[in-house]
Length: 157
Image (tube, rainbow, N blue to C red; front, side, top):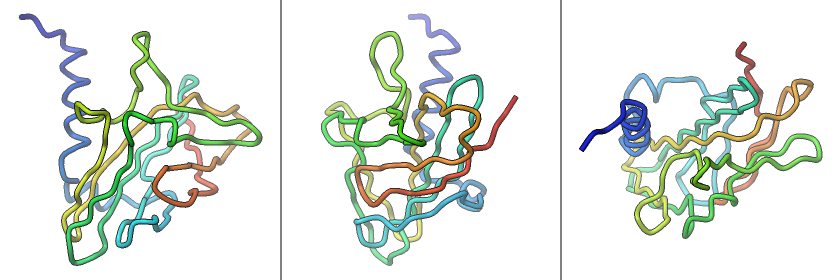
């Protein structure tokens, strides 16, 4: 069976999102932060890049407690609970030609429900249509807590 290098690269990136964050990833300074509804979990936006009409967002979920914490980020494949808004426009996660979301993949049942060890982190990423160039910030809505407002957009040529 042949595996194309692009497919392999996508699989490696998807797997990396499920692995515990490395020390360098945990050290990245967040662009925006918000405590979630799940006690002990903090969401930190560590990437927010607009390039060629796409907004790439990466969120680090940190467990600040002294016990493992489990929370449901995606419920039964409902990725649309996670979106961005800028101005009066809502942007849902991009889907590919096969209607698959371009984001951290779910398990076989359509769930992303990480258990984060004490003082550890879990990374989640997604790609959205980019807001217009005159928009310099957006609000990130995650189905697990209050909105993260005024997230800055970093433009890449």
